[in-house]
Image (cartoon, rainbow, N blue to C red; front, top):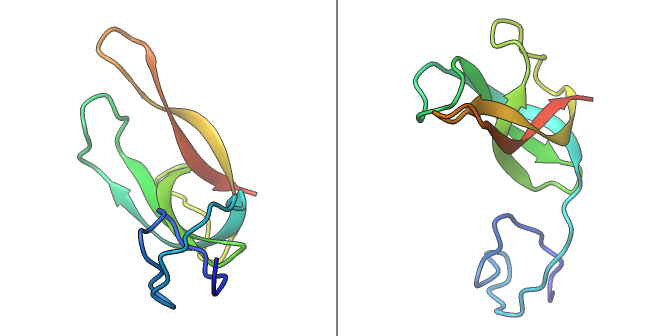
Length: 105
């Protein structure tokens, strides 16, 4: 709260000004695709292959999350993306595994 730096996940101390006065702030749900890679081996239940991405949110915070796209044709770098909730796989008994992910905006 002293210098206005935003970070995710929430830290116990500000890495910019070293203040321990840390507040909460909502993160934007949109940003630009910074980097991505295709994952071919994943945890149990996750569909493979899938794309995992780094996204620079509109406030400058960089986050990592799955990218909802065809792994053979991901969107180009710097594409606009938005946050959504979607199915990333299925449990052994067939229930959907839901997670936050980004999609092309």
